[in-house]
Amino acid sequence: MDPTPSDLRKAPLFGLLIAAAALPVLLSTVPGLADLPNHVARHHIFHHFGEGGPLDRFFDVQWRWIGNLGVDLPVMGLMRWLDAETATRLVVACIAPLTVAAMLLLSHVAHGRVSASAMLALPFAFHQAYLYGFVNYCLGVALAMLVLAAFLRRPPRTGMACLLFAAASILVWTAHLGGWFILVVAAGCAELTAIRSWRGVAASVPKLLPLAAPVIPLLLWRGASFGPPFAYVEDGLLWAKVMNFVTVLKGWSRYPDLIMTGSIGLLALLAICWAGGRRFDPRLLAAGVALCLGTVIMPTTVLGSWGADFRLAPVAGMFLLLSIGPAADPKRERMLFIAGALIFAVRVAGIALSWNRASAILEQRLIFLDDVPRGSRMGFLAVRSDCRHPWALTPDHKVPGLAIARRDAFTNTMFKVEGADLMTIRDPRDRARWFDLSENVEALCPAGKVDRTALAARLGEMARDRFDRIWLWGASPRDFTVPAGYEIRRIRGEDVLLGRTGV
Image (cartoon, rainbow, N blue to C red; front, side, top):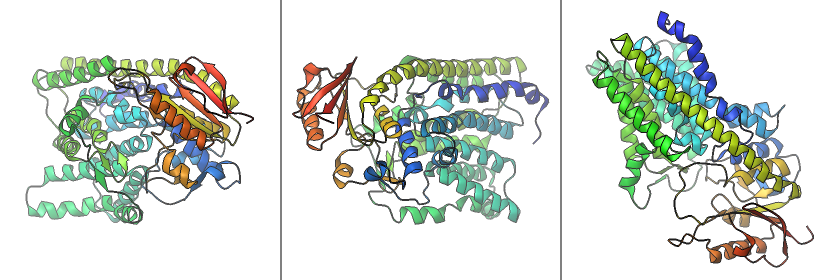
């Protein structure tokens, strides 16, 4: 499908929108993606594993082909020349631009031109799962949308095309299993909308078969894994499912996020009811509805991956918005185009500015790492005194993971997903206790105070396990007693660094 004259005239604008999506990550030395420090730490471990350094005492890496390597593989390639932080930032900076490009391409394939409704979908490039820092998943989704655009434009009909789509689907699966799931669901829905008889079913199967190629590595991978295959949240399941859609843009700032979500919804309704002459692309509409249903019925945890249900909600929103065709009235189309582009610009600028400011503060906090001996063990405790669940998603709880990249140290913030991670903690005691979430000391509620009893217990555990340094964030020296054998090394703002005497 050749570009329309309208799209050719807008090509510079589309290029600008794609490039702008990289700014939040590129303008921050420590981007605000909540889990990103853990990814940086993993990449540092991967690159230096087997060199006989201190990291080999703390971590083990078992190389194998799994459906969760999207960012890892290109970062490992770049680390021949760059450090883990720089290489990870460069690769992660490409995710949002790829997502924006994929949405524009899907809109063009679906409607013969880029519909103004695509502008309403662009802010979803910075959705909740992205701001959580689920970077492998988000890259998998971007790649899945690009492959879907190729599938909708020209489904495989020759042997060579089948091989190419099989390779592309394996690439998507390797980036992340969730991306491949979305690709299969969306492509299947697209074919279903075209079926008019049993003969149509027979004609669709050969087209979809190449997309099933990752079933083989999936069975090999998950056949050797452990743990329950899925789990639902225990309490408030119905409310959690509703909030999956309300909070699709959660993570930057509560009121701007909610206002943007509401504005996009209202503009979409306006486009359908008022803009006149609009039609839906049935393929993208069916995919969006199917993913909405998937969000409702999907367990919270699937194959060890938490948040499997809410990750689908923003992708469903993208497809539903992209399914809305251009208006018959050029003026109304132009108004919607401008409104959507402005919302996207505000979201990019707002996130970029807030991350840039937060990054400077995080770098000041990371000065604590100068006092962490190379190759040591550093414990981290994030002490809360607020009973409200924070809306903004920040790397504050995971930023000590950069001690691994900057000091070759062990820390207790690394996530552990049985069967879905190449890296494991070597020491059985550390593996059983000191991993992601062990850093959290929750507030004493409803009083809204530091839980000094829980803090003392956690500090005692770290002291018994002989952490060389213990970094506390959110507690002052009056909230705890320094464990025997430790002394206060640094205090700065809400941060306190304890060190073992003589180390």
